[in-house]
Amino acid sequence: MTLFLEAAAAQPGAGSMMTMLIPLLLMFGLMYLLIIRPENKKKKKAEEMRNALSLGDEITTIGGITGKIVQVTEDTITFETGEDRVRIQVKKWAISTTAKMEAEEAAATKRK
Image (cartoon, rainbow, N blue to C red; front, top):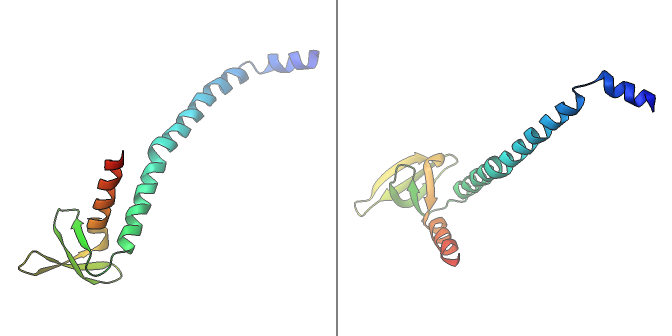
């Protein structure tokens, strides 16, 4: 018993260090659950959507231009806008949503 008391007296800051570390770890864990994890899920969903694009899909770019896909390559999309049939070629990362995705989100918010 005296060895235990001597060891505890030799390290006076050991207990306070642990009490400071626990809230810090809890804060990082909470930050991961509330910020990092949902953001990673959102990125993964957007990447899957961009890889699943096909001819005829209605899309909206990050700049707000809408149109119908007429050609898909590995990293670019060509789409037509409006009735004048102007064709625009953009990189896949510039596609923000599809008509299917917007309809699914609208239905999900309607259910809630």
